[in-house]
Each structure stands twice: as structure tokens, then as C-alpha cells.
Amino acid sequence: MLNKILGKFSKDLGIDLGTKNTLVYTTDKGIVINEPSVVAVNVRTDEILAVGEDARKMVGKTPYHIRAVKPLIDGVISDFEISEKMIKYFINKVHSENFTITPRPRMIIGIPLEITEVEKKAVEDAAKSAGARKVFLIEESMAAAIGARLPVTEAIANMIIDIGGGTTEIAVISLGGVVTWKCLRLAGDTLDNNIIDYMREEFNLLIGEQMAQKIKINIGSAITLKDSLEMDVKGRDLLNGLPKAITINDGQVRDAIRKTLNQIIDNIKTTLEKTPPELVADIYEQGIFLSGGGALLRGLDKEIAHATKISVKIVDDPLTAVVRGTGILLDDIDLLNKIISPGSSS
Image 1 (cartoon, one colour):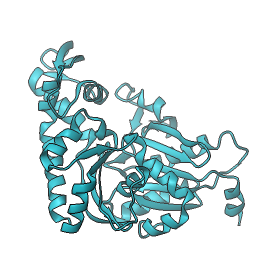
Image 2: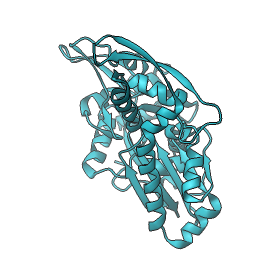
Image 3: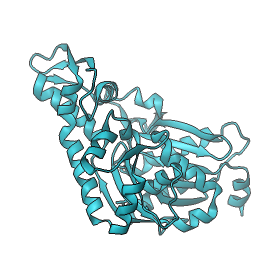
Image 4: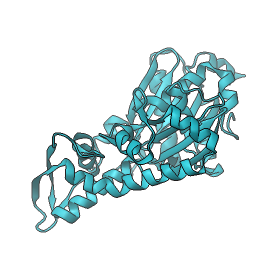
């Protein structure tokens, strides 16, 4: 009874609980939070020092008694207690302008396709411990397709590739369900690690995750560019331990990430091979849709189109497609009940 009363004064939330970033959607304001999934903890006192963007700035720069923790790995919870505190922080931040003493919102949370029942329960329990009165789980690829306004409940194939920080989900959706799919632990973080390894092997230069991500964003590409791009990179010389700066170009970054991109494309082909022929015909006509941060890699859509002989389209604002999908479901209970992940709505 108390939960229902408090729920009337709480804002229902759609959440994209991502490896890199957490996004939160409310029906009245849209996307209200888009912050890194990072929490800074004082290991001496177990005190939470910072969450989100403030914590991200501490990554790689903390003294021994402070840890900047990423509580999600490959899209699933790896640290329950810190995930709970992070979700609670975001809930309270959304309700900070209200007079609600203890928010009790309904929450719709995006989860990876390849998630175990134990991992699914961890997400539900973390959300409820953080204050949710009711939790609904939906596959991220389905949420991305809904956010992109694809006709997911119709008898037509909707092929969407969601490339996030920890996972790449390749899904063919029809009649409100996922028909064929692949979930890969190859995504944005893998590309960053590819760049880190390349810099170490080719230039004896040690760089951090944030520098690798900057390189990927600033000059990364999947195809040869008309105008070459260059970037100055700073790190530590592995030979003498001193600071070092070099200049690299987009071709070198392509060499670094080529193997991972080829693996993703090979899995797209495999998914198409497993898809019923009637749906493949639809995909050929409708095209393939790209979402997630990885969709913004220069020329990736063209590279996939070249490999599959199918047109590829990047959805509007691919970074927010999943959370926008959860937001649409907050207002459409009938659609939510049709596509909800089994075992949720707890």
C-alpha cells in the first residue's frame, strides 16, 4: 500500500543500463540523464565519492585507497552493491526537484539478449533494492528497434544491430519477438583495447582507456577515407618509462580494429544465414538498421552494406535508441505486455 502511495508521486523511468553509459528517460521530460556507468569508491570507508561523469574523470588517476569502478561488464552486473548504489543515485537525481521523500518508480530496463536467469535476477534485485516498486526487463535490441520506430509487432522482418560498449547484438525481429540473433562480447570496449594493444606493439607506447576512446572517436573508421585524418597521441614510453607523444593516422587505427570489425561482420552474415528465407527477403527490401555508439564509427554502415549486399541505415540518434524505446513502452502498456522479457514484471 505504501509503495502505491509513494508511486503516485514518483516518476516512472526507462533505463538503458549500459557498460559505458547509463541513460534515464522520464515520460514528462524525455532523456534526463546520460552519464558514464562509473562509481568512485573509498575502499577504506566504503563511501561512494562520485557517480557518473564526476567518477569518469577519476578513471586512471586515483590514489590506492580510491577505486573508480565500472559495475557493469559486457552489459551485465558484475558488482551488485555498487550497481544498486549507482541506480539509487540516478533515481534520486531524477526526483531531486520533487517533494517525494522515498521515490518508488516503475522501471523498464534494457538487458542483453544473452543473459542468464541469475544475471537477470541481479538486475531486478539491484533495481528494487535501489527503490523501484516494479521492474520490467526488455531486450536491448528490441528496445532499440522500438526507439527507432520500426514495426516490431508486424509480420515483417526488422534487422537491427546494436553496437554498445560491452556487447554487439544482432537481431531479426518479427511479430513482437526475436526470431534469430547473435550476442557478441565484441563492441566499443573491444575496439578501445585493440587500439591500446596496437599502440603498445607498434610504437612501444602505453596509453589508457580514455585516450584509446578519443582516438576511436576522432580518427577511427571502417573504410578508407577520402581525406586522411591524423591525431597526436600522448602516453608512456615502454622502453624508458618517460612521457612520449606520436602522431598516428586513420589507416593505422583501421589496422588496429580491423580484426574485430571482421568478426562482427562475419556474425552478421551468420545471423542472416540462420534467418528464415521469407524474413531475409524482407530484410533485403527494408535494409539493416544500426544503433548504439558503434554505429557512429565512420563508414561502418558502408562496410556492412558492402559485405552483405544489403542497404544499411543508421537510426536517428543511435546512442539513445534503447532508452527512447524504454520511454515509448512507459506510455504503451499494451506493447510492453506483448514484448516483455519472460520472468520480469516482478
